[in-house]
Amino acid sequence: MNSIKIIFRALMAVLFFVAFLLVSCQTNNKDVKSDSMTVVKAELPKRPHILWLVTEDMGPYIPSFGDSTIVTPNLSRLAAEGVVYPNLYSTSGVCAPSRAAIATGMYPSSIGANHMRTTSYTEVTGLPSYGAVPPPETRMVSELLRMNGYYCTNNYKEDYQFKASLTAWDESSPYAHWRNRDKDQPFFSIFNFTETHESGLFEPYGHRNIETRHYQAGDTTYTWAADRMTEEQTPIHLSKETKFSIPPYLPDTEVVRRDMWKLYNNIAEMDRQVGAVLKQLEDDGLLENTIIVFYGDHGGPLPREKRLIYDSGLNTPMIIRYPNKMHAGTKDEQLISFIDFAPTLLSLTGMQPREYMHGQAFIGEHKAKEERKFIHAAADRFDGFTDVIRAVRDKRYKYIRNYRPKQGYYLPVEYRERIPAMQELLRLRKEGKLDSIQTQWFRSSKDAEELFDCVADPYELNNLAEDPAHSDKLQELRTEMDRWLKEIGDEPNLPEKELISRLWNGSENQPVTSEPKITTSNNLITISCTTEGASIGYKIIGDDGPIPNAWSVYQQPFKIPKGLTVISQAYRIGYVPSEIVER
Image 1 (cartoon, rainbow, N blue to C red):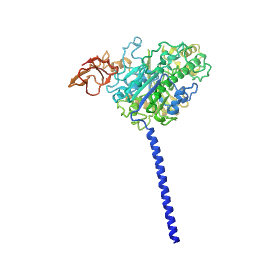
Image 2: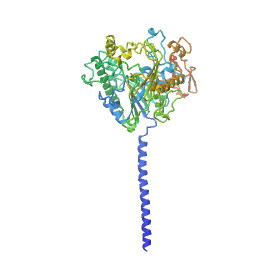
Image 3: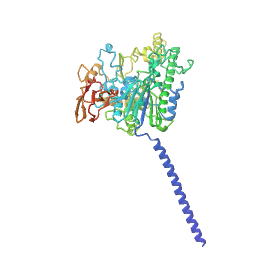
Image 4: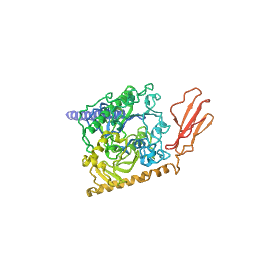
């Protein structure tokens, strides 16, 4: 009997232990399910709204990137709720070529977009006005999104080194806003903040009145003052007595300190405008369905920053806030280039990046299997002055190749010389009062090759190209540059006049997009164009109805009721747009 009791008790103990394991497993499974549900909840929406907040001439001058000179509550909140990306690099140290890379996903030097201001300075250069001409399959990424059902808006500034496709945007104006889309339609909206532009350092100092447009975004009845505020009218966010960390390539003088004060004060005003747009997003109940991206269009606005392809001209901060604060408060150290923006935008909306794009998606459904190992950059003509420089950088080292070593780095660009700090540099140079570091930029010639340790030497002042200890790294980056130039078809020494001839297929005149042909059969409208690669836009007009503002993107034949009119225009990027035809 006792033995039976012992066996029974042992059996009950086993059953209890098994039951405990089952309960524990169920609990763990619940935890897993709960975690899975959290992950699912935190997953990106299949067709998220995407909001780009783009500022200009922006180095890492904000608290989220280690500089606490000015308080930026809105950007700091984005960073606390999102991901900081410290290793974003533009493809050029100036805006328009960089925007060309963002819009197409292609290197500007591969499509004729790297010479700054191709439609102006023609009297100085003796060249005709022209635009970049990418391959025929190229589309602006916003057009690709529109073709996929997105409502795409661009607030205020384009400037791509080519005329934007007529089918690129549903709206592109100071009034452009996601609020004008159809109900429940996903949107891709860009808001450009120009307060931090280098012209914001000019004298007399004062914010642009038009910058207040972001506080009334979407209100088409509001009229903005066109002039600048006076300094007395300008919002002051920073004490003029603030002490600044002056980069070593600039002299620590009263003039330079004043420009540093303007720089930070402009950033604070930009932050306030960013906050106004974010509030509109929250007011609309869209915050947790939107991927918010903040970035600058290249590096800082000061002398030896903008237009150069040192890190001071290329590196710009980026913050991404994902829905439901995914990965909140984290940092992603991967290298990212502006040419990655277009494929990443497609990846985030479930679309496969186009094969012609040079970049790769760094997040989203079609994220690249391997992170980027190198970023590349180029500098050519700026306004009326030409240089030829190419650069490649890994996470630590940068290699620069100067194709005009007998020409100095400094170019007397008139626009830049309106900055008081630039005038100060020139004055002290003339007086022989610059130190050895500040004088480097004004050398009469430059080394054919430069190699910098960007970690030990962040201002890129100590050329290691002749150092035997770095010969292997020099050869590695030389080889990578040769590979890159060949892959994208970049011929750095190609004269700009010959470049134009190639873009225009040997003609002396800019090519013209052929008129679209509209045919109809049983109210089925078909539109075609003989110009390879042309985007075709169309509008449907009633007898007494208003003409739509936006051109729809033609993709396939469509039906319309009798009595309506169809008008169409075609445009290939870099060509002259066709005439408008109707049927």
